[in-house]
Image (cartoon, rainbow, N blue to C red; front, side):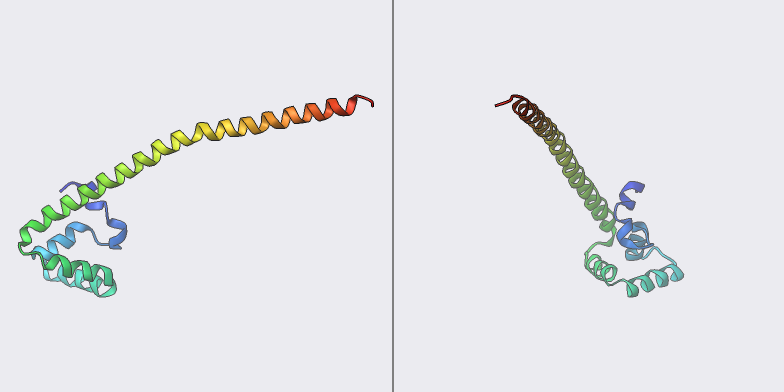
Length: 122
């Protein structure tokens, strides 16, 4: 499995990689490794609920495919969101610069007008 796909949720797994979770569900771990995963599940309610949900999948051999597809979809959505944010950011900056320049220009014109007005004796 692609390492990038396995690591996409690594922050949420708190010390356990996704491959180990999939191996646990498929029954591919040794007794010691299964006990380690079960201990982590006892300490993390979210992981426990996720494992229960994945455990309900009918064919355990398809879990790997589900995980890969979910990670691929998540990566795609995150990339789209990032691209939209970048496009929006690039469009916003010219207006900010124009506004700042306009404010500075108005201040300078006002300054010189007031200065000119104060020089002329009445």
